[in-house]
Image 1 (cartoon, rainbow, N blue to C red):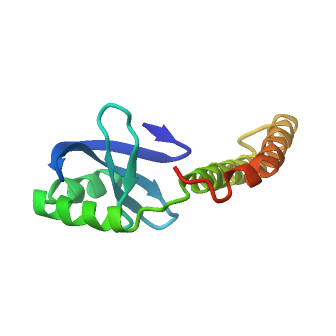
Image 2 (tube, one colour):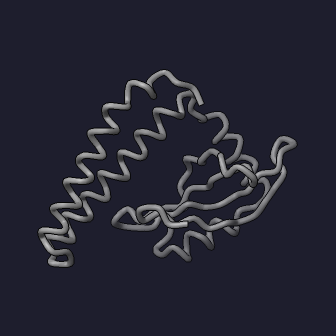
Length: 149
C-alpha cells in the first residue's frame, strides 16, 4: 500500500486477546530516515490501531528488517500499548489525518513546481483543487468533533 509516501508491509498474523490480528509496519520518510510504526488490524475489515513506537531505518528495507526481527512478545507489548493509547474520537482524528495528507501533498506539488518537475499551470490548478478540498474538509469538521468511533 502506498498512501502519500507511506508504504505498508505485512509482517504476520497473530492472536491478540483472543482475536486474530494482522500486523503490518507502515513506513514514511521524515527527511532524515525512514520511520516505521506497527499497525494492528482486523484481517477482514482492515480497521485497526497504530503503535506509536518508532522503528527507524536508513532505508525502507532496513526498517522492515527491524520490524521482522520483533518477537511475538514484542508485538504483544506494542499491541497493548497501542490499545492503551487508542483515541476515543477517531472520526476527528481521521479527518485531521486526511487534512494533513492533503497539506503534505500540496507542499510536494509546490516543491516539484519550484524544481521544474511540474509545469506551473498544472501545479497551480492542482494547488487550487487541494485548497478547495481543504476548505470543504474544514466546513465538515464540526460534524467530526466529539464523535466517537
